[in-house]
Image (cartoon, rainbow, N blue to C red; front, top):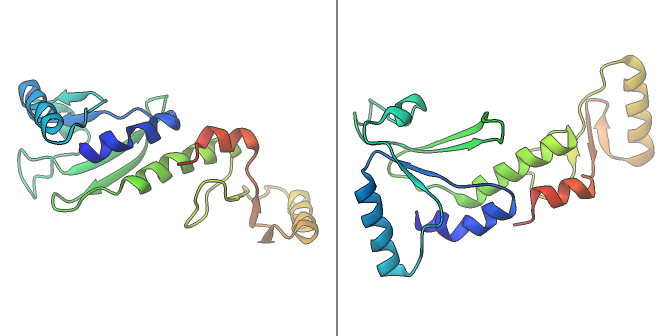
Length: 174
């Protein structure tokens, strides 16, 4: 909670809202939030949903019966503005989340949506994206000519483009 609270501004800057979910009660959440504040001075700036009966956690696969019937695993869901789950990260109980990767995933999804391209392995913001492959023979020939002229790929099926300015500003720069 503390690390997500510290990173909240980064998420807000890329148009992303954080929400916590816990099978503990609202009173427990208030106690955590207050204890965190008293011990660290950090306020938790996002809501924490009390899912006392685990209904939401079960629907999203957050309770692993192999581990426990009541303890949640450390899942992270990236859900877009249409309510579609775009990414699910599942962390074992004993492994912490990696917030820079979660931020990068959100930025990559936003970049991919904005450019209609794909982000390559190890992509970071402001790097080129992969163009969708052509679907016609003429498109293939044009793509190969473009690659030869611009040196922006290795073949018709793997070529790159620099993101447009509107896409760079939308995906933020954390």
